Amino acid sequence: MNRLWEQLQIFRPGWTDLIEILIVAFLLYRILLVIQRTRAMQIVLGVVFMAFMYGAARLLDLILIRTLLETVFQYGAIAALVVFQPELRSALARLGRSRMIRVFQKLEGSQVAEEIVEAAERLSRAKHGAIIAIEQDVGLDEYGETGSTVDARVSAEMLVTIFTPYSPLHDGAVLISGDQIHTAGAILPLTQSSVSDRSLGTRHRAALGLSEETDALIIVVSEETSQISIASAGRLERDVGPERLRAMVVGALPSREGTLPAAPVAG
Image (cartoon, rainbow, N blue to C red):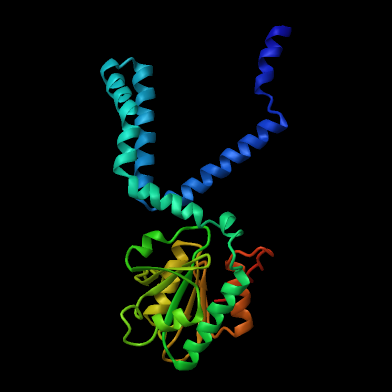
């Protein structure tokens, strides 16, 4: 009886086991965030399905199917590394731009926020339309593929130049990751929800659409009214003032001093 009790002790987790479980759970969560809505996610689902089939084959003693799946598992990992090399590079780049890494970047979130706010105010005064999406935990690489790569340090001058009328990229969205302008001229998905306000244009609908699919903070400058709006979590706040805009942007960007939590967005 004592021997059986000693064997069962392995099922009693200690504090180190709990820490390991939390670390593994966090890593799995981050991996799922990186690969969601990509071909890699389809591969993961396929591997899960084949693992289920392999388990069923072993259980039912289906020798042929089990042998074939064992061969696939043996060489499939090497083939996946070759075929999905671009996706792996993109995933590693996104991990490098994650909030945990960006904390150590030289340009602090508050400085980036000042550049973005200044650009929005200058665009508003000039009545130049603009849409700026700030990446948070959910990556925007999928949408960045529809635009042109910029990879330039965030600055008010750069943002104003991009959205100058008749410039090649002024019609699309700018995607910001950390302190970098990652993409310009990106095409964003329009909201599928019914919008009661008929005065909302394509930029506002695109901002709502992206905020419904990701946790990004999207800033819209209307060229008709000069108003600055913010879309977040599927909701749109219009006629946002400079202080409110600054607080929201700082809350969405990394900072060594911590981030200022964003207030709920009113509809």
